[in-house]
Length: 266
Image (cartoon, rainbow, N blue to C red):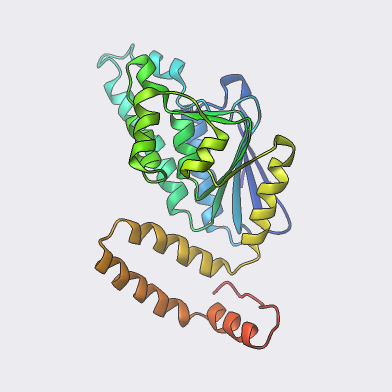
């Protein structure tokens, strides 16, 4: 996994990969370069057996300010007033968000500073999120005549409709405490405790069977889009396949024998 100036990679001995947005001068905006780096990083991590959990962090002062509006404005100079360029950037961004959801490894956002617009979308796309209690979240497009339609997709799949629409229609900042209340993040903690809290959760998850985690993550997002009966039919099939897997045999045996399981990740 190649190191990058704007996206730092750090894989520890327990299989936790920290990806750190490192473009503080642009408030870690989702520039074309950043989107390309993120897409590659999640694809590589998803297929790397050494990676068990991914933590997505950022260098202060912002977690992510969303799209790079200077780049977007420059795109307007094209003959079509930027239409093809805007479509390209939106497609890149949607690909990154779906790449996070489709990545077989659990992804935890570690949020400091502000996460706005597509930056808020980035947090909402992660499986879990821990935020410093000083962090803030918003979908502020309405302030500049641009409804946050793509951030809306991830946001609406994390929080209830009334809360999502309040954020989208007002563009107001949401505190970390409120984000935890409405389900955008799992919890908010003091800044000094943020990294250790995130890593504690990451270590706990990394100790599980990666086969079981990948199976469960894939099934969770798939069944969520189904009707109740179809979801149960699908999940029952997944459960049968999971029961036949080696790690399920090992895990059940270890539980009955009161010992620590030895995962084969198969």
